[in-house]
Amino acid sequence: MSFRSTVLTLYPEMFPGPLGVSLAGRALSEGSWSLDTVQIRDFAADKHRSVDDTPAGGGAGMVLKPDVLAAALDSVADGRPMLALTPRGKPLSQARVRELAAGEGVILLCGRFEGFDERIFEARDIEPVSVGDYVLSGGELGAMIVLDACVRLLPGVMGAASSGEEESFETGLLEYPHYTRPVDWEGRTIPEVLRSGDHAKIAAWRHAKAVEDTRLRRPDLIERHGGASQAPPSGAQRKK
Ligand code: SAH
Image (cartoon, rainbow, N blue to C red; front, side):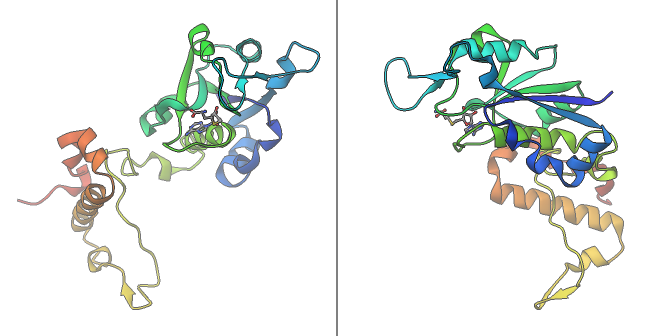
């Protein structure tokens, strides 16, 4: 079973783009996942092949037409989750990424201009997804974010690294900081404990660092996960 992705876009030439290199690219050429693009404009019905029109009620920009979007979606709908990229959506989370990666694949609808006619969300089973609290010029980079996050979790793509439960967000905490050689660099040394070889002490230090950095940088994560995030990972049980 491989993860099948279909991206509906006005700019199919943007794909696979960054997803064609490194881990995702290798996994793509090995068939661990597939990527198809659909040109939304191919579903325009009028002779000008128009995909957008002016906003009802006035205002700047253009809005993607619901009839064209529906025709494009209906041509590929097959039970896979359908996600539309929009800053009005629910923020993408690692938990949702895990669910998607465990499934058959995903259909991604990319907006442009002012975005989608809202009725598409009522007429079809589409999950609005945001990749962050900022505005991009199109949904394509967002779709790449969704796909990249999913693909690295597919079996065999990253090996042991991606199954780790200590990565950022998996525990409700940011991951602990990493270091590598040289031990002494510009007068800064790798923390002593990491060179001690004492695995229990290392695990406890890493957990404490993860908590400290999360408190400083992402107090919202601590808030959201409450006390649960404070439990040290199983490898870090403190000696009594
Ligand atoms: N007028 C819209 C923004 C349109 S930006 C608004 O204020 O909500 C054009 C397209 O870029 C959107 O349709 C969407 O597909 C994509 N996009 C922009 N920012 C995004 C974000 N943070 N997350 C996901 N998609 C985004």
